[in-house]
Length: 212
Image (cartoon, rainbow, N blue to C red; front, side, top):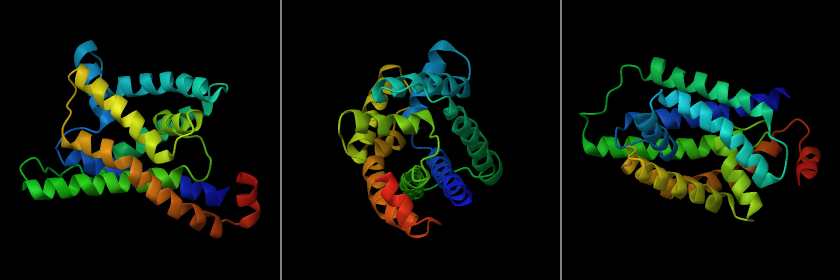
């Protein structure tokens, strides 16, 4: 349990470090964030409010796709995500401002953000703990329609980017890059992290065989 918990939290920390980099690149919000900002602009309330509201809605969407009961444990990762994201944005990156930085540095920060997000997601889905609904969604789509993780993530990204465009969300390079590259990065990292995770797992091969 300790091993799985450490991997789970490590993945979340890496993931939201990438999210913080993407936001600080100031080249457009990620596809989910762009959508939440657009909804907030039209309907009021904060972006955080809509983040939580849509996460709860997605719990039921995921349950429908997987033909299972809604996973109420998803509340845990929602709370953890909020705390970890605030840690990176409000403490670590609180004095970072790349709005006037050279464009090349902004692009490099953006690409690094996408890479860390993909690596973080690939790590934190390994322990099979409750996942945030937005991350569980692409896994549910992949399983429901027999798609690879890469294709499932890309499908979700394209849909959310399109919705963000329709409602006037801040779509830019920071939105397009994750839409195009996040799926392949998650797939690439997951395929390499999977054997490493079970190589160092306390129960090792026995647990891997049970999962398979």
